[in-house]
Each structure stands twice: as C-alpha cells, then as structure tokens.
Image (cartoon, rainbow, N blue to C red; front, side, top):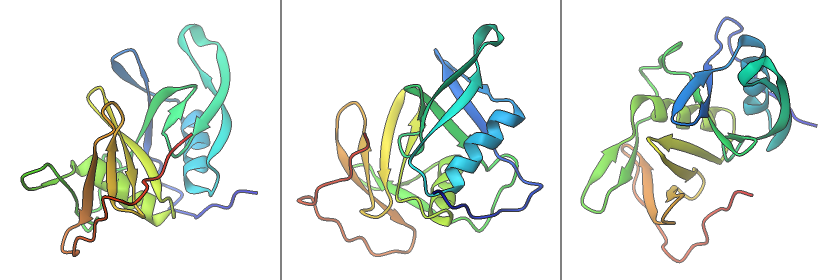
Length: 167
C-alpha cells in the first residue's frame, strides 16, 4: 500500500502531458491523481486521463520514468510555489558544473522531499534519468552518464557503479 507525505492543501503543482511537441496542462482532477502518486511510495499506478476528443483513457503512470502510457509527463511545482531555498543541483558537462534550471532544480528537491531516489526530466526532446542516490544523470538517447551534485557538496563519483534502471 502506498503512503503519502502531506503538503499544504492549497498548493497543487501543474502537471503536463506531452502530446507531439507540445506540453498540455492536465485538468485539476487528473493533476490530483498524478500528484497523489508522486507523493506516495508507489512506482506505477493506473490513471485515467481525458485525451484528445474528450475520451478518457486509463493507462499506467510510471512515476520514476515520468511517463503515462509511454508519453512524457512533467510536474512544475516552481511556478505555483517557488522555493527560494531549494537545494541547488548541478551536473557536470565535461568542462564545468552547470546549474539545472529552476524548474528542474525544484523538481529534484521535491523528489528528495518525497523520498524518491529516481526520476526523469525532459529538456527539449531529450530525457534524462536522474539517480538521486547515486548522484548521476543518464541521457536517455545516448546512455551517457554524468555526475550531478548538490551545490556545496563534495563530489563522490564512481564510474564503475551500476546506475539504476527504470522499467
């Protein structure tokens, strides 16, 4: 059984589903279903979404992969409830540390808050699996593994470690 962590009842982040090349906001009822799953310990759950034409389709939401019916979904908690004290996350781009965007940084902070060690973020058409326990990001297309860190944290990175996989 999934357990959830409560957050202020007045706060509900925006959930979006990518259809083609555009992100589409989900209705409040569907948003609540996605948020409940995100805040719980579950990894997959079936959720009904109203898709094109107004028909409901029920499909699996993979919370770690951030996909519903194999389509990308994203959670924007920054726009509705920015946290100026959110932990700064950075990734190594082969020459220097680069800050994640404020939206992705907030998402990673929220994953930590809700005890999620794995997530996926989408930047343009690219997906990146984030392993918060191992502090690495994995490019979905190339498989390239890069270290990530919380600002001010020492970097401990083992290239021989097996990164997490998301089914």
